[in-house]
Image 1: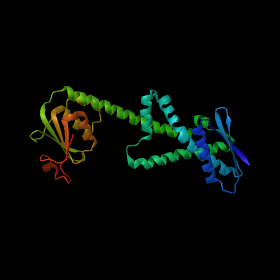
Image 2 (image 1 turned 180 degrees about the vertical axis):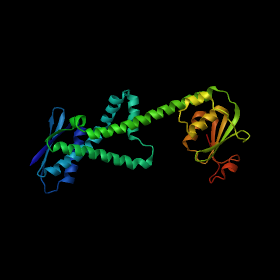
Image 3 (image 1 turned 90 degrees about the vertical axis):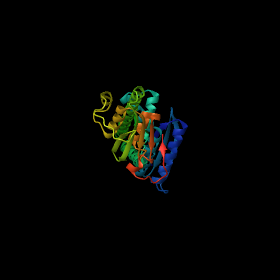
Length: 297
C-alpha cells in the first residue's frame, strides 16, 4: 500500500477541515472494497496526514481534489491580498480590503453563474498541478505548494486582481469626477430658473427651459470640457450642458429613472434635481405612463 503525506497548518480549524475534505474525496474516488489507511500527527507547527491505498491513481485524485478545495477556502484570500500589496503597492489595510472586495463581488446577478464556474476552474487548476506533483513525490506541504508551485493558479488569480484594480481605479476616478462637478455646481450662480431634461428613450434627450422651450448652448463651458475625458460620450455631453446652463432646478422626465446618466445627474445636482415618470409636462412628450404618477428626489 502506497502512502502520501500531506502537511497543512496546525491550527485546528484548518487541519480539521482538510481532514474532513480528504475523507469526503476518499469516499468519492475509492471504492468501499479498497482499504484506506489514514492517520494524523503533529510535525512542528504543522499537522501531517498520512493516507494510503492500494489504488495510487485514485488516491492521488482524492488528495488533489481535497487540496484544491482546501486552498480555495484557506489560502486564496491571502494570495489575493499578497498580489494586491506586493505587485501593485496597495498595502493600506482599508484600501487593500476595498480592492479585495472587487475581486469577489459582481454587481450583475446574471454573472453569478460565471463566478461559480470560475471557482470550479481554479479548483481544477490546483488539482491538476497537485496531481502532477504527486506523480513524483510522496510528501506535500500545502503552504509551500501555494507559495512556490501553483503557477497556473496564481496567474489566474493575478488576472482577477488586475481586473479588480481596473474597476477600483475607474470607480475612484468617477467618484472624484462627480465630487469635482458637485463642487462646481455648488459655487456657480444659477443662470436660469429651471431646466427640463426630456428622456425620449435610449440615448436621446431634449433639454428645455422653464417655459418648455428648447435650450440652445452655443459652446460648452471650457472648464467643464477640460474636466471630461477626451472621448466624450452622450452622458458627458448631457451633464456638461446642464452645468453650462446652470439651472436652479433640474427636472428629469423619463420612463427609466434607474439609468446611469440620470443617477449621475441626481448625484451632481443633489436636492436641485427631481425625477418624474409622469406629469402634465412630460406626458405629451413621452406618452402615458402605465403606473400611477411618480416623482423622485
